[in-house]
Image 1 (cartoon, rainbow, N blue to C red):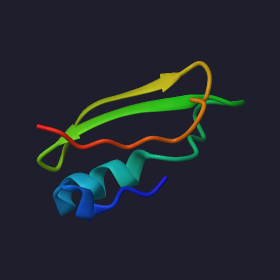
Image 2: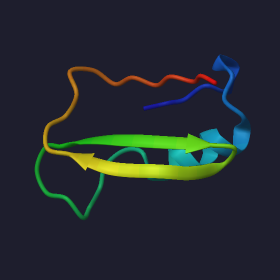
Image 3: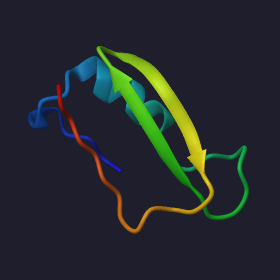
Length: 61
């Protein structure tokens, strides 16, 4: 998944999310991820039991 700074997220937040998003070697099989970050810091990274129907990225206050 790509997260575009032009959607409003600052570069530091885009960088930390990009570092953890994608394939995870610690979890086998198909799964999803929920990633929350703000101001260049990860707030929550959780593995989901099933992948989402489609990738999504949102930025908001």
